[in-house]
Image (cartoon, rainbow, N blue to C red; front, side, top):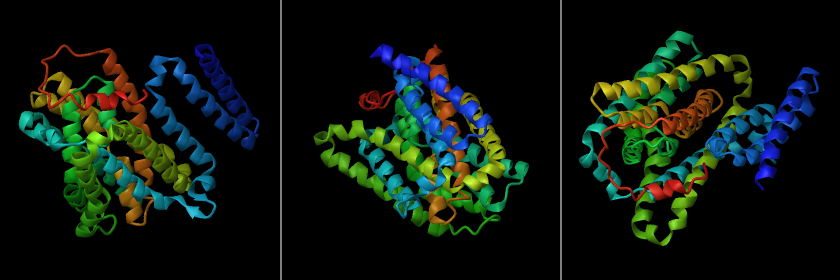
Length: 377
């Protein structure tokens, strides 16, 4: 089996060369078909390497975005069914799944490590919105595209930050607590930030947005917590399955948004990617050094850096869809979400190979760690 997987990895390299040659010879359709074969070989072949397996989710995201650009009509419309309508239900499913992994011990974290949680939340909701607003001024994006840049800066960290903190050997307990509280704060904080920074770009009804985010995020999250309280011990399979469901849903959402905004991507894709590169990188950098400035230890600072640098792209896409602007406001969140998964995977693997010799931070509970060990990395 190992030799077979290694062979598939080499075949993926050969097919990639074939794709390049076919595009150069203007055989566009043949190149697109071979691209599909390339990703099949690559996604199977990476299991031959423990190192490359750590980038499996990243490769899925790249594959989804690439194929959506090549075959947009097959992604946005399946037999007359508009796939955009699935964005909000999928986000609700992700939030419910997140809730099923949460309990009272996650909220006790504020009492056990108040400094790390408060610093993380402060940096989360100040650094990313301010950088986003600055980028819109720097690049002079059209109003709805600019509003999407600000939107990704105003949403909380996503579930993928917990996965990457686990992979990087960060403080997983702090990561889970930060994600939980930032998500619960989102229905109130995100609309206020959007009204402040994007109100001059598009009409923002803060109260209506609060209600929309509450239905999309807060209610399913609370429902998941209640489910975990009464039925969690009877369904351990759910804790193992939900991270996979969340990753699959994120990949699908990115594919739909990229396909819907393909035309805009072709005209300003590089500029949007450059903005995402700066936004994400500055989030990591200022998240880490902001934490160090507030005297957090290195391990906790790495944890906060990942929480700040990674945003909930799915939530941003859902808000854009609810506002009827999925193909414009939702475009930057899709690009940012794709890039952050790539950069986050590299950063997590780098930090995993370079652990810090630091003060052991307080932990809430190690009971959550086995859940993340179920994730194929």
